[in-house]
Image: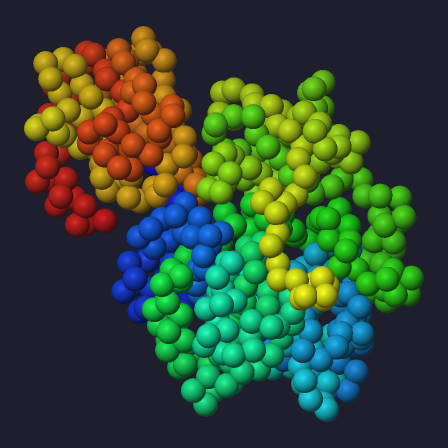
Length: 385
Length: 124
C-alpha cells in the first residue's frame, strides 16, 4: 500500500519543533511535516471526530508555526496599505482586519490578519502563514525601512467551537464579550496574553498568542475543561474547507488575485477608488468587469473525494478550471471541494466533470461555505468585520 | 484467519486452500486515519502480484492497495460500500477487502508471518 502521506512522512532533516511538541506527543499526536515544522496532524480521536468535536463543542489547535510580527511607527497602517488592498488606516485600536500582500500584478503573496494595537504609538500586529513568513517579513522590512519591524517569538493557540467563548470567558473574564475580529491583551499569570476573536474553522473562537514558556500552562488549563479536546492540522484543513476558507499555497497563490479568489469584500471602499497598492490596475478591472474565473465550491457527485489538481471540464469537454482543495467533509459526510472555474461556467448549480482515476464524475458548482459560519455577533447584531 | 501473511506494503493475505482473503494491516489503517471511501475491483478481474487492486480514500489522501498475490477476484466485501470505516474498526476481520482465487499459492511463501511483520514494523 502506498499513500500520498508517505511522501510527506519522508521528513527532511531540519524540521523545527513547536514549543508544545512534548504536549502533543503525550496526547498521542501523529506528527507530520508542514511548512518546515513537525506538526500534529491528528490525535488519537482522528480527523473526523476532531472536526465534529470542533463543530459541537470546542477544540484546541496549536498554530505556533504561523508568523507573528509587529510593525511600528507613525502612520504604519497607512504605509502597510502600499502592500495590501485593505483599508488599514481606518482600523480602530483593538480591531483585526483580514487582507493580502500583493505582487505587482495583483497576485497574492500571502494572506494575513492585521490588528491595530492599543496605545499612543501606532503599532500593527501581523499574523501570516508559516510557509510564507520569511518571504513576508523580508518584503515588509525592505519595503517599509523607516518603520520598526520585529518578528515575535510567541506561541499561537486557537480555541475554536461553540463552547470556546464560555470556556475562555471562565478563564479570562471579559473574553466572551470581545466582538468578532476584536482583540484584547489579557494577563495570564503575569504574562501578556493576546486574545483575538478570530479563527479558521467557521465557528466562533479565539486565537491566543503568548510567550512559549507560558503556552503549556494555558494549553493544559484549556484541555482540562470537559468541553475541550485537542485537534490537529487534518481537522483544521477539513474545517476550513467546509467553511469555504481559502488556504494559501492551494487556493491562493501568486497567480490568483483577491477578486477572483472571492476576497473582494476585504478590499476597502476607499482603496478601490484610490488604489495605491500593487496590482491595482488588474484588480480595478476585475472589480469593474468581473473576474475571468472565480473560486467556487464544488460538490463531486461521487462517494470518492476529488483532490487538488483535478481538471474540470464543461459538458462539451472544454477545460474550464481545476480543483485547488478537495476532501471529505466530516460534518456533511460527503466529498466537497473548491477550485477556480471560468466565470461563464461558474454559475451555481452548473454541472462540470472531472477525472477520477479511470472514470469521470459530475461535479456541481456550489455556494460557499458548505457549512454556515457561526461567528460571534454582538447583541446589536453587528459582527464588527 | 490464524495464518496471516503480510507484505512490506502492509497488505495481508489469509490463505485457505487456494482462496486468499486480502486486506490491509492494523498498522496500515492506523496510518491512513479515517477511511471514507474504498474503490474495489470487479469480481472476475485478474490480479497480478504487485499490481493495484484497490484505492482507499481517507479524509486526507488517496492510497493504492497492491495485491500481494496473483489470481482472480472471486468476491469483494459488500459491506464496504456503505461502511468503509469497517477497515479502521476491524481490518483483519469484517474490514477485509477482496477474496482472490490464487494461481500460485507458493507466492505467499515470500510474505512475512506475524512475527516477521512485527519486527518489520519496528524498523519503520
